[in-house]
Structure formats: C-alpha cells, structure tokens
Amino acid sequence: MEKNLFIDASHPEETRVVLKSDNGVEEYEYENKNRLNFKNNIYLGTVSRVEPSLQAAFINFGRVKHGFLAFNDIQSDYYQIPTEDKDRLKEAEEKIREDLKKTSLEEVDQNSNDNHESVNENNIEENINETTQLDNNNFEEEKLNAEVPLVETVQPNQNVREKLKNTYGVKRYKIQEVIKPGQVILIQVTKEERGNKGAALTTFISLAGKFMVLMPNTAKGGGISRKIFNSSDRTKIRSILNEIEIPKSMGVIVRTAAEGVSEESLKNDIDKLISEWEKTSSKDSGSSPVLIHEEPDISIKVIREHLSSNFKKLLIENNEKFEDIKSYISDTSPELNEIVEKYSDDLDLFERYHIEDQIKKALDRKVWLPSGGHLIIDRTEALTVIDVNTGKFVGKDSLEQTVFENNLEAAEEIARQLRLRDIGGIIVIDFIDMETQKRQQELLSKFKQELAKDKTRTQVFDISRLGLVEMTRKNVSAGLIESFSDECEECNGRGLIIGDIFSNNSVDTDLLESEAVVE
Image: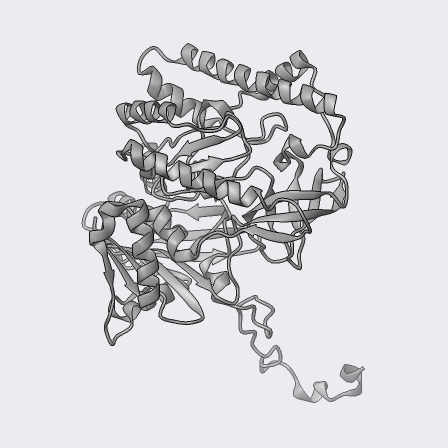
C-alpha cells in the first residue's frame, strides 16, 4: 500500500499534517499557533492542593486549570519522608523489581514448551500495568505509540504483589503523608485538558527520539517494542544495547522504528536524548511554575512517529518548514532524504490532493462503505456508538454472505475512522447480526488486525449476547469533531432542530389567548 505524508505550513495561523494511503486520509494532525499543544511538555510546577479522598494532587504548572497528578504517578524521590525510610523504600523497590521479573519469567516457563522467547516477551508485555506505587515506571503509552516495555516493568497478579510487599515490609504510604502543598515538583503532561478536566500529569519523565525513548528518572525500566516480532532482530538490538553506555539511573525503550537500524544510529539517538535531558534537568530549580522543556512542533513529531522507508513521498508546502524538516531528517534518517520534496504550485497542497474534501467527510455522521453499506457514528458524553448498515449493498450470494462481507468492510473502515477522527474512550459497535459463531470470530479477528495499525492503545472485548462489540481507545487529545466545532447556543449541543410545539392544528389558538392559559 502506497503511503504519503503531506505537511501544509503555508498558513501563518496553523500547521496541518496528513498521512494518506490508497484508502484515503488515514490520520490528520494540526497545530494552531494560538492554541499550541502542550502534551509531553515538561514543567516545574507547585503542588496547589492535596486530595486524600482522590489520592491525588493538583499541580499549578502555569495553566488556568491546574493539572491532575495521581499518587501512582509520583516518583518516590519526591516523598517528603525521613531519609532512612526513603532509602529502605528504594532498596525494596529494587528487590521487588528483580523478584517481579523472576516471577514473571517463571510463570511463562510453566506455560510454554517451545518458542520460549516469543511467549516470554508477548505474554509478559501484555500484563504490564502501572498501578503499583512500588514499581512506578509510569510513562504514557501513547508517547511511545503503544510500545510496551519488557520484563523489567512487568507486574504479576495482585496476590504476588501483595506477597512481595509483605516480604520486604514496605509501608503503604498515603499521598497526604508524602506530598505537601507548596512543594515544587518536576512534571510532564501526559494528557491535555478536555472540557472541564485539567491536564493529566506524571513525574516519570520520558523523552522520545526517533528510535529510542529515554526514561531519565526510571532506573532498570525499558525494553524493546513488541511490534518488532523477529527474534533475531530483537537479539541484535539487545546486543547493541549492551554496548551502549546508558547511565544506571536511566532506562530506555527501543521503538518499532529501530528495526534494522545500525548501532551508530541508535547510539546517536540515545546520546541526543541524554544531552537533552541534561539541559532540561539543569533548569529544575528556581521559581515555578515554568516551562523547562517544550516538544517540537507538530510536523517534526509526526515525522518522528510515522516516517519510514515504507513511505513514497513527503511533501512540504512552505520554504522555511522544508529547510527545518530537511535538516531534521538529514540528522536522524539520512536514507529518507530522497523522498522529501518541496511543494510549489499555485493550487494549495491539500486542494491538489483533495484532502480538504476528505476531512470534511470525516465530520459527517454517515460514512459510506465501498460496496454501498454505511456507518452511522454518534458521539455522546459517555461513549461513541457506531451502527453498521447494509444500505445499498445487496450482494450476489446468500444474505449471510452479504452481511459478512459488509461487516468486514465496516471493520476496516471503523478502524480507519477511529484514527482519523481520533475518537477515544468507550466505543460500542453494532455490527449486523450473523448467525454462525465462526463468522463472528472471523469478523472480530479482522477488526483486531485493522486496529493493530493504530498507534494509540486499544482494547477489544468479545461480541456480546446482543451482538455488540465493546472496545476502548485511549483518549490522547481532542478529537477531530471537537477541534473543528463549537456547541450550538440554540440547542445546547443537542444537534436537533426542535419544531414549534404549537404547530399542531389540533391546538385551539383561541385558548392560547384566554386568561386561563395565560395564568
């Protein structure tokens, strides 16, 4: 499948980035100059309030709305407890990490007879959870494009965790015991503000490069993206990592883009990230709130996350932006220089490739499928509902086959629409009912396969008794519709035109003027 990346920076107020394939626009990103994204930025903030009932703190980091910092996202270095207690906690954390790793490996050994490495990595990585206060390698998965760390950060079931805690006698602190109002703290934004909710924050910092992610304050954390399936590639990467000097206080994650990359490229990437962290950490004192590290603009971020040898072309409309991007690619991926082109035409880049029309269609409630069926996408405060209909699609064979083919088309298009519209939260899909369980499982398998292309974490559940597929997709930022729409003042966001309630002819207009009615 041919893939292209288009960057339109010709408008002074915004930068627009589109990933386009043969199927149309796959992903759309934009950045307004007057409303810059601040996700992944690092700030020096101040604890404004501690909420024991929520086991969380609110942090003033320079925004109107204070950010939300959950207890599990607070690194123990910030605990205001006696030095002896902190040293014991650190020692216990190290022992627990090692035991968690050992326990996880033993659990895998019991469940596998062959292909040990594959089972080891996949089974362990699937169980990673950042809920415990003792193993808080809690960086945001969307930063890493759902690339999950390896066994160093894995957690077994709750019973094992509790057993380990009891073994080492680690006290289970409460947030009000370790964090105080007025305390200065280094935080990173993991999720931007949405509606009335403030930004989500963490103290477990991560800096993303082209091939690596550096976790500068998370020792013994990290691993290799599980999307690198080839065992020989994984072995090669591990050997390279063993040759790279990484400070003991830091951890790294090898991203999917590192597959097949040379040792020199990986080393250069990690060196840049370490240097970047040194500059950032040197500013972690003084007055707060203050921004101390800002993520690059949207064009560089998208290139960093997406651009690879699989792309045919990268078109850039804007001379200054072209030079910036050319310099970045020459520095990080010189082998991709040949696909970078400057767009110069009287016709706007997005108009030339009919991108604006496709973006407008992405705002519609109805989405047509190739064979004539269609989707209806409705968003509510609590969840998103997607209804699949055959529409004009009548098929050529049996009704069951027609329904199955329509559902397969819908599965592919729904996965694309979730990426394009950036829909997050709870999603319920009403596929057309199918009689056989075999067809249901084939459909579910196809849907999961299409969702695997998504950089944002998704989770799909089995088809319910009512024939519904329930899933979740991580909320990363405001979706496409939220970004391009405002709530209607007339209908308060209901999206309905309410007719005249007195338009019914059965209503006696004379009564409307009577004293009884007026009263």
